[in-house]
Amino acid sequence: MTPTELEQLIRESLDKFYQRRLDTLTKLKLKDILKKKNPYLFRAVGIRKASEIVTAILQAYMSSSDETIFGAVFFEPIVLRCSGGIAAKLEGKNIGGIDIIIETDTTYKAIQVKSGPNIFNASQTKRMNDEFKQLRDSLLNLNKQFDPLLAHCYGYKTAEPKNGQIYRVRAGQTLWEELTGDPDFYLKIIRLMQDYPNQHRASFEQEWDKALNRFEFEFLRDFGTLDGSIDWEKLLRFNSGVENTKKPSIRRAISSKIVKER
Image 1 (cartoon, rainbow, N blue to C red):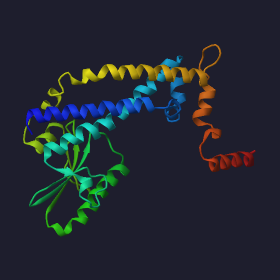
Image 2: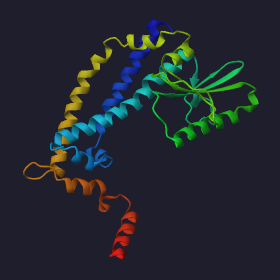
Image 3: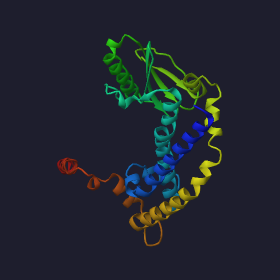
Image 4: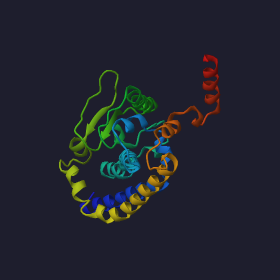
């Protein structure tokens, strides 16, 4: 891939990233986020302004969402192009969460692409390992070396298969050099962004401000008092009260248990 081709791919990927960010922000619902947050913690740290809660939950949500989106629409296309592989979903095999396949005369490399070296819990690690095993078992008749790889696009974690884990882990410079043969490729990605992100920032900040205003208005309307304070009990009832569960069977079961205990 030439520098010009890489720069064009980076720009296209950034376009998709910002469009997905805008779509996420404009469709976001305040109450959907509040249901997953900890009202006790907000109260414990002394929050008194609706704007503080709104800003905190919106920043936390978008940070997590950005990481997921960025991996899918920015890193994965670059890994795909620079590695010379093909999108795994085109293979038609039992691929699970595998993203990219690189096949040579002697090897079959299966890659799962992750943005960075986030810590996986035991069940997530097992599921990923099982997906690699399922793909390996479906390829036994190829008589090729199977090379499963967990690719972290930043960071420096490396690991070899051990304790029943069949895949390798590569990250950051080590990963990009393995895929491209270029020890500076990881630096070229950020250099070639140039000032292009700034061209998107203004439109995103405009939508961000709208979301903050919208959420603050909704929060005060639904969880504010007439004197401008936060109604913590009302917020907690919404977040944790039985009456707000979506599943009637759960409400009935809990209500019945409460009645019996009385």
